[in-house]
Length: 328
Ligand code: ATP
Ligand code: MG
Image 1 (cartoon, rainbow, N blue to C red):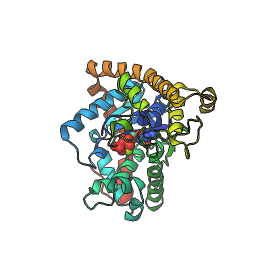
Image 2: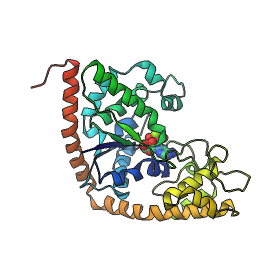
Image 3: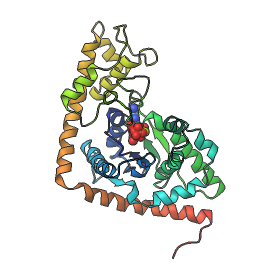
Image 4: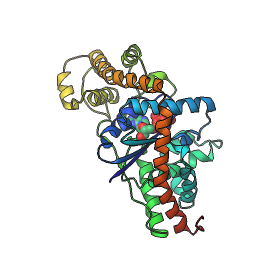
């Protein structure tokens, strides 16, 4: 059976970009593959965090996964640090990865901004991410466009390992959606919507109430032409609204463009907000149910148990191939 792996960091409020680029893709995959969905708390440690906040957000993220439609009877949902194979495997792969290739990762350059005081973890994080994926022999990794470079690194590391040691890893590929792979910030459509953005007007949070959603869309940055057209390069703000609207309503972008000819941006903003509210409403209801049910921790325990079963075998093969003495 095909395997799927994907993860999200418990680093802030999940937003529409996370939903459209990643989470929304997870749901249908549950029907056709064995899925491992992970709360990647170890990745969150790459920048300083408040410990209590991290713990709280990790459990909330589990609630959001379930609220968005993840079925714990079909998928394995777990916290990364509950399976120590990730850390151990990452050490082995760090000894395969090269400084040069890690230094070329654009996310490190963006988030590190060349500062001497960034953590070593931020630099090696793509290797941990590669390990996350490779431990489960995943074929498919549903992610946003910003992660495709890390996926290429994952394939390079897997190929190098398979060539230099032994054929241990399946080569994974990224599954990226067409219109939703890169949702832009509402306050700055030149940059992707991001949990770590400074302004709350950057993102639509998945737990935002309807009034907040409307308020944020009303303030979305567009342009001064007042022409509704899909042209991400020259009209990034309007194209972002059309992309979000299309992903939320299921209507193709072309037909939205046609429908909105001659109408103003205000109209498009309000209708996009409404389409978003319709999707968030049931997600938020399920989220609250799940958080109140007290089930989250048992779902996570079950997920981690299955995760360890699968990863243990890959880790053993890695150790053996690299010359470590088998454990008794
Ligand atoms: P951070 O700023 O802390 O890195 P993030 O918003 O990038 O947060 P992640 O947890 O790093 O969120 O990413 C989770 C998933 O969401 C990944 O698959 C990533 O590619 C996807 N994703 C993140 N931002 C967007 C976006 N703006 N559009 C589409 N997909 C996105
Ligand atoms: Mg990110």
